[in-house]
Image (cartoon, rainbow, N blue to C red; front, side, top):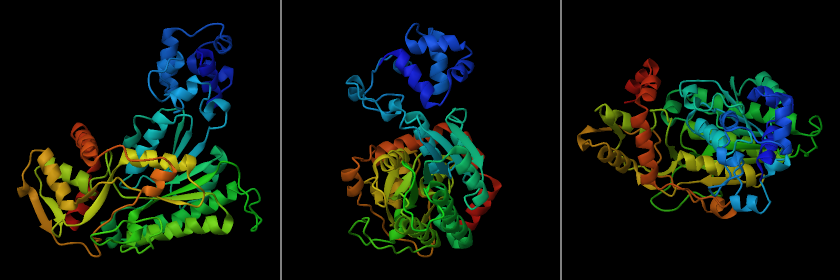
Length: 441
């Protein structure tokens, strides 16, 4: 593909006129026209500016492909060379994606993934910025022309209506949720409001904007390309014994106020598909870990306490088993569901890494050069599920996805990130967190 074609496709994908493109690059409209016609090629300095503004590799701008995947649209290079490019170059793939809870742990990682790997999409991030929401998580992408932040709550129907109208939302990825089991035991009402009522309000607004005839209760036709993706958890299935795996057919049996609220939200999403025909998918993941995770969760809590030589609180004897999923693998799985998931289907997302909590703690102790003397066994929490384990055969076989990271690989990246970003950790550990920590442990 020639430089002229790449530049033309960039401008079209960002919905810019030649005049608007010229203003962004501080050149004349005539210069843009000459580039797109192939009469001239931008200077090296101009190519660098284009690369920075639109997050496009220089190699792509020059029509040179040194990797297996196109940096601009994510299409396989062999297909590009044979003339079959990503839909972005047909003007079909541009999507306006509303990511709720995008300043949280998984949401912020997903936004970073989308804006660095799938940059032909516009991302609108709606987050209430509660204790676990942190815009610092998105500092690397905050200036992207494809990113917009809106502060607000998914329970605010008026605000959601304005967002859908202003940004013409095509896809909703609903991360917004209270997500810590321990907190749900103390304040379950907050989980009902955010996770159940909030999801219902979001579904109602999506239905209003996406149905072709929103006033007709019998109408099941929706605009082309829309989808509601509910990000859920394997905890809705309850607990397993020492054998067996959760499948998408496993009956729901939540054991905590948190998992009960997520199961309720899932049922609302399912009902909007069955009753109103809304295109939806539900994903249920195993335990995530990785950069930007709030230190109330096991792995960042233990890393931080190890670094500071503080006791490592372990519930019971630490025999609880979890399947660990590196957050980047979760993001690629969500994207696979977004692009190819069959409407109405549920997809389990697991990392194939089952470990006892105590073994995770001891692994971290070893990696950080500490001793087991830091371990402090504490009274187990009420209703603590013994084992979670995911059968991810459906998503691997139907959507051609599989986790890229082993537990050791993901943990090494995670530990390195927290060691390198100690200032981030220090800033998120506020007085409120310290109060919560002392109350829980």
